Image (cartoon, rainbow, N blue to C red; front, side, top):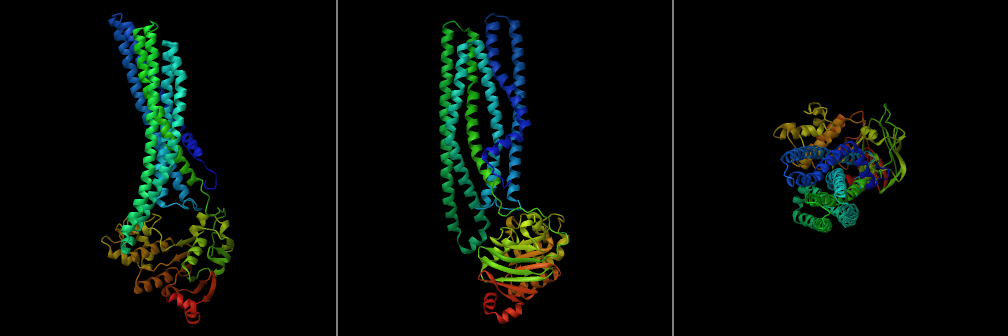
Length: 566
């Protein structure tokens, strides 16, 4: 879906179509309810003319029984119709949330470009809820239209002039309400944009709370959020002001319309064209019309906000992929040899290198930006601007991204931990909730020592984002997770920057032993890790500056020596 052009109108249309059956059921039940509501003042007028005015007790009882039956029907039809409507709105919101999350998690990427994670969460929750509510708004609109139609017919049967006033005046009123909703739609979209931005900033600051405290930058962070929140507040107040003006003006127009109906009915009663019961029915129908007409005002507001949210969802669903989607599977007998030929991407300037299958290869960089670009290429977060990256002679652009990432796992040093136990984070796939099978991987990453230091061992909850762990503990858990996944090709990035020298040495030995015979790439400038590799490639100035063993390069290459021992 990410490669297709998706509009807000497409999102709204698909949402309503997907809930067609429930919308139909709820619409029918709502029409029954509105029919009962509209018939109530008509029946009261009949009771007055045929029973009260004629003092006929038998007719009075009969019509009261009819009125009671109508009340029972309208009550149950409202309950069942409202239930079907609410279920439809919730189901539609749920489907949209799944669609947004599915697009965000698409292996081709692209949906998260230029968006904070908090903003995406806002789209998947608040915007999906608002668009889901459109189905309920449409059903309410159908109900209101049914109520107005029944009232107009009843008024026509009672008095042609009154019926014509309703039939001719209602479309004009609806058209004016639609025009008044346009400013609300624009303000609502701006409000959601600013609210999503504020949510994104808040999530960003919370994720980096420990770093901010360490730097003593809490005040600056609070001020940044205060500015963003103030802008969001201004946008929200503008949207609320637009909604209040829209509601107030529509209510005033509705009042004028009802006053016109009452004035026409009163003149007809004075002329003797209407009986007392018919006048009561006409006034009752006019008062009943307040509900449907106010519903139309609410429906216009909901549709305006729904259209704005649908446009935001469409931007996520229609976001172009970061990488092209290949179709070929990864060969079942993949050896795991990686080759980069003339690769250009950002700071990479024609990189040629080969990672032999089944070997532990170290890659040192003179500039951290080189590591970021290289990891993006190997993990297919971005495709090279020129050149090619191959796995066993097959270009990565030809391979399905999801299948590729199962074969080539790029474990970045800043990857996320999740709410739950340490064991559940290591065994992320969930096949072993207790983490018993992850023992070897945890030992290799020295994460078993982390578990022993926790109150409940590997079953201890690490908190949201692993914030209850230190930086070094997080790194060891992340490395254990990558090792336990046991991919054919593993690329790890700076897995030991936050641990002491003794722990780093243990991790280096454990990593080498655990991955022996399987293709492993360690992107790092750590001498301890580079020392256990079979071969080291040094990237300098956007290209391969030197190759050899760590000992050879440390002895013969001055720039390499200065980089890794800095």
